[in-house]
Image (cartoon, rainbow, N blue to C red; front, side, top):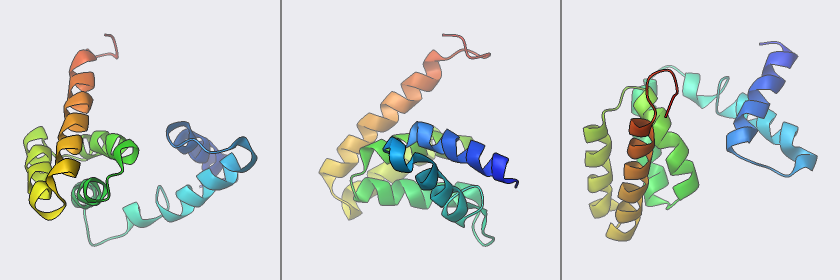
Amino acid sequence: MTEEERLRAARAITGALPAPDEIRDDWGLFIVDTVLPNGVWERPGLSKRDRSLATISALTALHRPNELRIHLGRALDNGLSRTEIGETLMHMAIYGGFPVAVEAMRIAKEVFDERDAVKPGGER
């Protein structure tokens, strides 16, 4: 990946994960190098689908709704079904607590509804 491609990826990430302007590019490059596309998401041993399952579980248990919203969409893109996501969030009610699972279910419904509202070709 060229420096220009790294910076373009970093700015795409900070579009979803805002940071103060003074450190925006550095923050994005840190994520590029440690998380994706050059980091932990590309390691062998777990599929992206399985990494998504682990990530939405952790974000639910830690009550990180903003990150959860982003990663629920990614989980769908990585092959998890809506049913599998729902089952995972229900499972989290036992291991993470009902309040965080209820919030995660609400966010999942919003993400699913937003996807349903977009027609093929990106039209609403």
